[in-house]
Structure formats: C-alpha cells, structure tokens
Image (cartoon, rainbow, N blue to C red; front, side, top):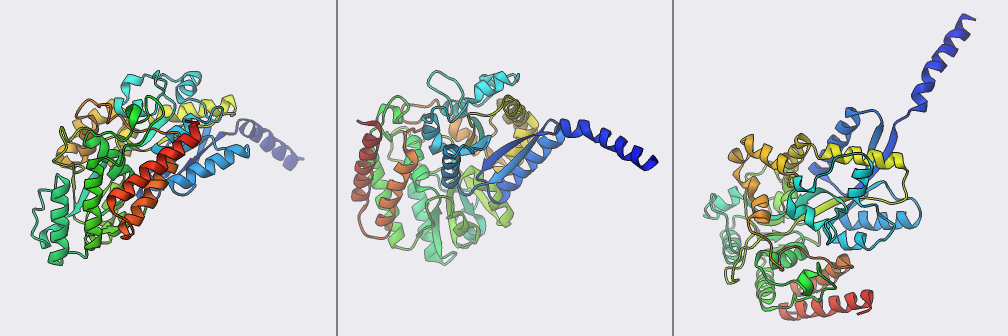
Length: 432
C-alpha cells in the first residue's frame, strides 16, 4: 500500500508539469561554423531564461537551400515557425501572400513593445513595406568588407597597416602578392552578385536597375552599364593571369583565404568568426570603390538574413516567437551577436553599448561595416535592390560570370547577356 501511495503521489506531482510542457518553437537556419555556434548559444540562453517556450534551431543547408526547403515545407503544410531567409529572398517572401505573418503584427499581438526607431534605419527599411511595416526581424545583417592576410602582405612588401581602398589598388596588391611568391593567389571573393554587382552599384552610386533598383516598382536591370563592364573586364584579366581565383557562387571562396592560398578576400562582415577561428594574422579594410565613379564611396546595402514568421501557427506559438524576438532585441544579446560574429547590431542601443565598452578602440576595423552602411544618406541607387525573383536573377548572372571567368566570353558580353536574360525572366514573372 505504501508503495502504491508513493507511486500515486509521484504521478500526481508529475501531472502539472506535463500539462504545462514548454511550447516548441522551430527555427530553420543556414548558419555554419562559428556562426552556427552563436545560434546554438542564443537559443540555449533564451531557453534558460524562461520555461514557457523551447526554441529548437535546425540547420537546413545554405541560404538558397534553406529558402527552397521552407517553400517546399509550406506547400506541404509543414512549415517551420521561424525561417531564416537571406536578403535576396525578401522579394520572394513579400510576394508569398498567406505564407508569412508580418513581424510587427507578431510582436504587437504578443504584447511586446516594438519601437522601430530603436533599430538601425538602413536595416529596418530594407525589411519593411513601403508604408513602413516591418515584415521580418533582421537577425544577421552584414556589409561586404575587405579582409587581408598581414603575413602575406609583409612577405609581398606591402604595407600591413594600409589595406587597399580602391579596386585599382586591390588589383595592384593582388598582382604583387602572386608575382612575389608570397601566396599562389592574390585575390578571391565570395558572392560576386552581392559584392561585385549589387553593392558595387550602391557603393559607387550607379544604378543597378530602374525604379530605384526595384524598390519603387518592377525593375529593369542596368548591370551592363560602362562601370560594370570596366570592373568585370579587369576581374577577368586577373583570372586569366591566375591572380584572381574564383571560389564559387556563395561563401566558398572564404576557404581560399583562411587556408592561406589567397592574400586578399572580399566577403561579408559576417564571415569574421571563421577568419578569427583560423588563427591567421588578418586585417580589415572597407569595401573597395572605383575611383573613377563620381561621388564614390556612397553607402553599402545590408546583406545577411532576417527571420520570417510563417503563417497559420497557433496563438501560443506566436506568443513564443514574440518573446524570442524581444529577447533577441536585448542590448546584451545584440552586443554578443555583433562582437562574436561580425554581423551588425540591429539596435542603436547595442551599437552605442559596444562603442562605450571600448570595443571599437581595441578593434577599430570592426566598426567599418557599420560606418559603410550609415556614413551617407542613401540615394536612389543605394537603398538596396529588390526583385520578385532575385535568387533567379543571381543564378543567371553567375552563369554568365562563370563563362567569362572560364574565357568563353568577354565582360561586355557576359553583362549584356545577364541583363537581357534577367529582364526577360522579370517580364515572364510579372507579365510585363
């Protein structure tokens, strides 16, 4: 009897716990390496901070793979609660009526205070409607910057404290690195479409497309303009000489740099974690600009990704998502994310706290991506780019760039084909 009574008492004690089990919140993401460790840490700390919700991050592959997996899951009625979508998927998600729930609504309905003015304007603007409603939460915003290997610079006789500021200076330094034997490759770059096309346009204040680069209406690509042709012609020449090594369409080229094969890399500020982990003696510089472009440098535009809340979930799940986003907005959390990953803090408070801590005095180059993005008021050419099928447009551009780098066509032909094929794809989609 005594054993039975004890068993019953234990069962009764357990019932309230099972009745109030934490609501699971699924979060699909595309972070790898050091940035995946940051995701795990943030999720773990959020879960430890309260008992109502359990955030479960799940890695789904590269940015494009995660977007495609999310689309397939939504069609099958199995979408995650939160999905990390890279910047170029913004137009796709905006057009997916019913598939998403605007983050401004989620926060408001979840009883969380949301003041848009507390977030960095350039980042929030990119992920909002023209009327100013924030659609997704900017988790990991980044800006493209230049990294260089100081040991390779020293071997090549280059100034280790003075990174190249213009593309002409990059080309000269890269050639010197290879010719001197300091490294087998002078220069490599991730994301040719984001860095050498979209941000090249913004930083040099030239048009990527009509209608304010698609933010004010259906865009017509202008990427075959003279400054683009000049730039890609010079890049193709470096490839022929073996000075520039192409790594791939997304972030693959980072390995060419961290391995010591290449002395200079242009990459997202969010690539910093893996570069630090490599143990190399590295330096950071601003994204190079073309010295022949009037008014350059202008401002860079945000890359990285934001967190989209999927539609059709329960009120309890949405409350949990709102609680997580409120946690993610905390100054200390944003400061940790910024300092550990190289991504930009999304709130002004986190930026000011980082500055007040003396972090930028000890690491002056770490403020570079923020200053690049916010140094000048954006123009019609530098607010960002948007198209309903931007991932497809990038694929088209990459196909033409790869033919150019393989010596199968010149830069002018590659850009002409990329613009014509891209515009045809936009017309097919919009009925224009």
